[in-house]
Image 1 (spheres, rainbow, N blue to C red):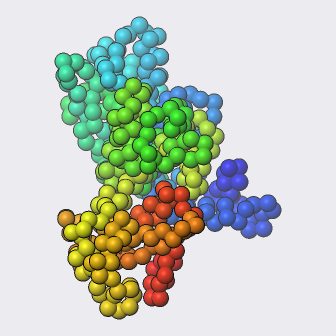
Image 2 (tube, rainbow, N blue to C red):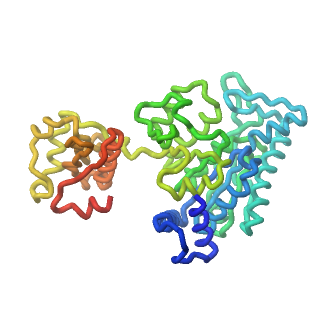
Image 3 (cartoon, rainbow, N blue to C red):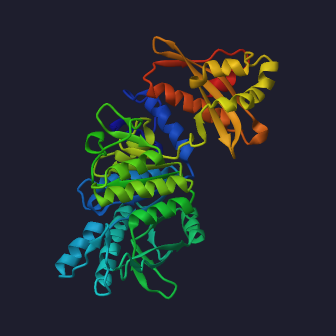
Length: 424
């Protein structure tokens, strides 16, 4: 981890030398690869207040500055949940929470604003130490939650609209926008809004490449939650990644888990379904956590990612004629071996199909050969019917299936498609 931070510092400040002694070449390659991949992309980062108040936060912010300086467009959403609790308690104001949502009274809203803007100003002050300009703006329009199930949430609200054009201009100018957890109605009435929900909506509207939740709740461990059998868990018990369906199942199967956990997971799912490729839930108190999560393949938190397999399913007997039709051109050219409907049905359990609007647009099979290996076979796609990415998706799915089965390797037998497979 120290190597990653050091190399990034050298890249940013122009001090990188190829002959650096002791530096792993693969680390350097990975960093340049990721930096090039994400340059110009938007990262929306929500920061829990307990992370902001933690002694390690200046180092966390320094890492965010590094991302900004290598060309990533950083958007910050400081949370103020515990800070609001602290200030309301100090002034003797009671604002109960119902289903994790604070009932914000008119008496409390000035103090809630105080806490929210204090959190945002702390972040802006630390940015200024690194000569990075942060800017706090009233870019969020909100409306009141109103009465839900008999509970009047008073001055608590939800995001109604965000001034994306203005925020894009701020980012184009090289500034870092900072969003306190306050929104305003059309007539200027302030509402207390969820920074977790705000971050998710921002990531969708800004078409962010990544959404981060820097939390103080520690890692999500499989031993602490009921998870589905296909959930990815690393050797230390960390829930390393979840598809939206798996995240929703975790929420549903653990009704007594903390409301904050439910909110972060739920908003991560919302973001992914809204077009964000990945949402990362990490322990923001851990030194270097952002860089490890961005610049290493294994990561250190829990990633919720859009499932590219939602339109993939096991083959049904009735699919066989359409699959043969898709493969026919490749079979005629000798790219694929000749197969019949009967051949497919004999190994039906090995085959998967990719469907678009109930039409089969791709297919492929994983044939196990024993001794921990399997063959990817019969991969074909119908580009004319929206299957341009079907081949990629089927291949990735079959590799994912092989990993879940604990296989050591997969291989292909091909005479004409070697370059395509090499790209993967």
